[in-house]
Image 1 (spheres, rainbow, N blue to C red):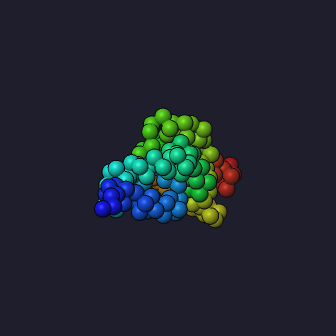
Image 2: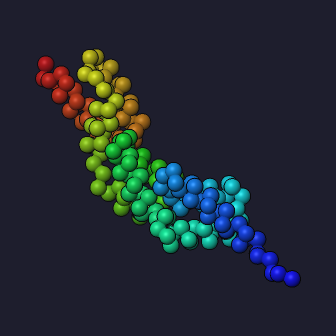
Length: 163
């Protein structure tokens, strides 16, 4: 009588395939992959083996993921360092990895870039309206009050001048 494979052996292949599909969309943290595989109903043993295999192959690396996430946000959707750290924390990245990935961020420049993207056209309102609109947008992006004020002032002076 042939020996049958243990249940975790039978689930390992499909579990690994599900992880590959999930990672094909964008890089993910280990926590995200683990959570996804649990939701799909795979046994813990298969999930652990899959995560170990993905780490071995270089597909799972939270430090690389954190750098990717930080660079992506900085390029396409600038956020304040505090909000970016919160996002990475919610994705299960370790605090030291988060600190290293975000240590070189320039909140002043990112706030300026985010505000410029938001405007898309020249400022044609009074300063209070401009400040409320763009300042509120920057605050929701996680920038501190002081950083917001400096970015707003810089843009206002570029657009309006000293008049």
